[in-house]
Length: 403
Image 1 (cartoon, rainbow, N blue to C red):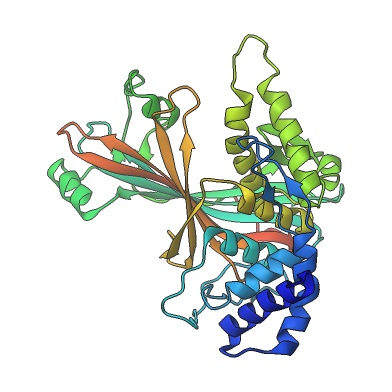
Image 2 (spheres, one colour):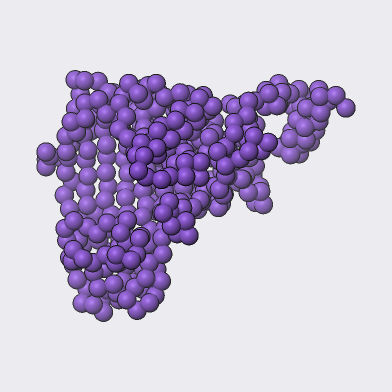
């Protein structure tokens, strides 16, 4: 069987899977894309030898992945704002198949194809989030959950002002079991942490900071702070990045990966006195950089799509099915572990919830395990839920209290 026959046979099988019948026309239509897939250049992952190369998905591969996953990936229709920017809103899901489950790669490639349709410019780059963080109370008797909403309006034009708007949403017991323990403790409405509260032997407590001031059960006022980073568009690989540098971020998967790896390696090797296994940790830092591009930086839609495609090529990401995010929206969950650089036996479970229909992230949830004074183990979750990400020509609605 020659290559042309092989490709047509593969396309015919895919067409049968999607439509329930064979179609020569469908095979012919997909032939060109399958040929381009076979010719897609390879990229070597740092943890692989050259003999174990991974295909870096091209745009045609993403479309094939989207088609193959169509029976499994529920599509969410984006809600359009007045200026045509996308807001992330929960929409009804329809499922063609009750049994098929998309893989992590299919979800990521579907998101990549969808995000290429996003708006590419505007007066402001806007991110609206709701952050929720769990903390063990000062007596170590129960778990609290605090919330904060935030908006970041980054002005690209020099004549516009950039703003950060936020509001504390209050503190409450995290679960019914914690509420019972809270009531038994007298139902306090504020909590103060001593400076030496954190256990020096517990690395996780050292990393998750204690609040600077007392926690209050009541919600606070909405406040605004003017940002004075005239030429800063955010950060990447834990380094500030300018608008000019953002515009220069490559949009092709192969070039973007090379660009990110060079930034990561430069930062990891900057201090000659600190020994770092660069090859071992590069993939983890590369994954974090791609997540930063997807959820934060005002890059081009093509660069954001390439970040998704790089994630699809990395190991260690698993599909966890459809879930409800902290704001009650349905999305596809992807899970992976964040390994501690200093203690490889310690790790944080991370769940990334994405809407494959729009390519926009819904939430990122970090989970660690803590222990109360009575020995009960508890899950401590920190989450960021994204309410809106993208370009807009709207203006921020500023509260009266501002700096």
